Length: 247
Image (cartoon, rainbow, N blue to C red; front, top):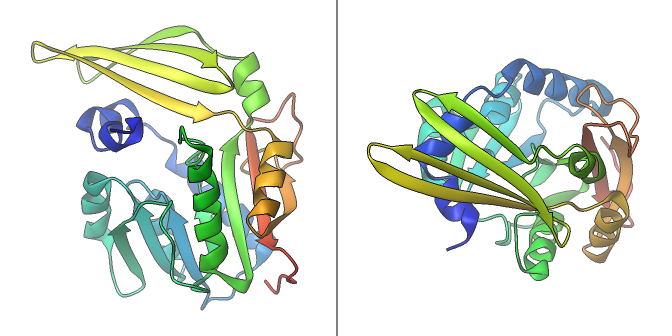
């Protein structure tokens, strides 16, 4: 089983990451809307939406939003917030989308680079390309791999809800490997996260190979300039190769 299939559906994943910053997520959405001015009838896909925090905020602003994620548990949680302009489905991002459905496809919070097979990354980008309308945009919020590796914390402990998570990190063949070990209820658990630390040149090449063209790159959630040494994020905005963006 692929690491993300078991870990993302585990209750312990949600315990460990329960303190994610909603205010920061809202600031990011507001910055994107101000910059790219989507029409109120824009159709949006939140690809790998988790429990739907970005999707819900976008829908509250009046947009038509679909959130999809591989985790059944996350989708079950998010679906309690569904309404006529907000829906959630279980979906593997490597699987094809219906052609030309969306004005915007969002892939937030480093929800790419998970796969051991290179083709799986290409299949994901191909699916995104298919799902975008001719004037549509992809916004991919990825880690700045260079800074992440330079500032890697090899070991740390976090105690949440009485569970002590022992976390180790290392870099193996360009992949950041995070091992999470803990005990609960007399049982020992061990999970991994594995994310390929793609750099900007690698991403640009993959985009082009799959019919996407990199337009803009930002380094933070306020859409500040990207700097490989200092930026915390690598936020990439793409249009369809050979098409003009109308947003």
